[in-house]
Length: 498
Image (cartoon, rainbow, N blue to C red; front, top):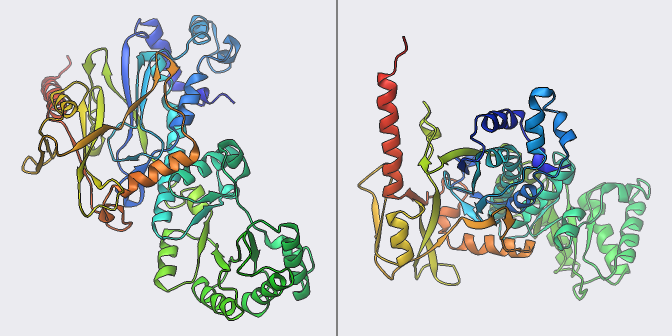
């Protein structure tokens, strides 16, 4: 399947009009961004830009006969011939995977001939809306605990594509591992797994059958990390005891170099984990880890830890794989400039008013003695500018800058010369239709997110009622938006028809 054509037909009906009316080569700028993060989150996690770059590369790979399937008829013949040779020839700027992004900031900016940029809308949104939903949820789950979280929701994901790339997104945003072998193989990272209840019941539904299952599993996986599932029949009366028995018979104890443990998948996890920990310690297996699963999410994990659960690692499935509490992420793709003219969409809903023009966002950092970040710098404010405007020039020159709240002129912050650093969040990934983006491994993307997160304050990272990080726009961008609105409102007020 060529993902470049996972599109809506209206992208192509508009394209025909652009083509026949002589607008196809006008230079358009589109921004992809979101207006509100799910679950009252303060921010979202970027994942999917790598697949966007790959998708763009395949635009124009299909023969003319392909387009006849959804654009039939003689009236589309010339347009079909054009589409069969049309490739993306413009530029794309995007945030890195693992970047933390706030509402209204451009995650991807597309600059190119109007028709080429237009037809990228739906496939681009398909990719980023899915992966960012999963990544943002995974970040919430992982922030609920200091213990490792494994993603294993492939069986609940909305299809194989979603399972593979959702697992990737989850790892970027904090998960220690995934059970999905294809994600592991494609990304060069190991996948993880233990056993299912069917492995135990395949030895017959008896207590001795459970013991034999554990013994055989250990025998066939010696040298690896060994986790035994102990809740098939009765966790405390036989499961944990059979596990201890099998470990002893196999010579597995605290000196075992591969790591070992047991898994709980049902029942009162807080109570069972404390009892299992007590029993293990009484038998001298103090380094035996307790792994817990069973419909977990960030709220249940938080509550388990509040109750004093003795769990060393969590496995989370559908809550992450489907972003179960908020499965639809709200990225949109809007035209912000045509040729050299900034444009915007105005709406009765205030939240749908967009920022016009060719934009770039800078993240401003300052030194802090209280920072947990390794370099001592903390993220202080993000500001989105028009490229080349007065604020961007001042930032690039390292001069004193003042950033104002868009909605409250009395809220502002001045950063003296030499007392801040700034980096652009949108980087070139495609130039003239060719890839220029650096290639990063999945561990590098995860490390980038982890480091980025450390530069935000604990109050900004918390799950409930987070402190809202300052996100502003430059005076020039604000003035451009207001000028367009003022002209538009005047025209609307005076508009009549005969």
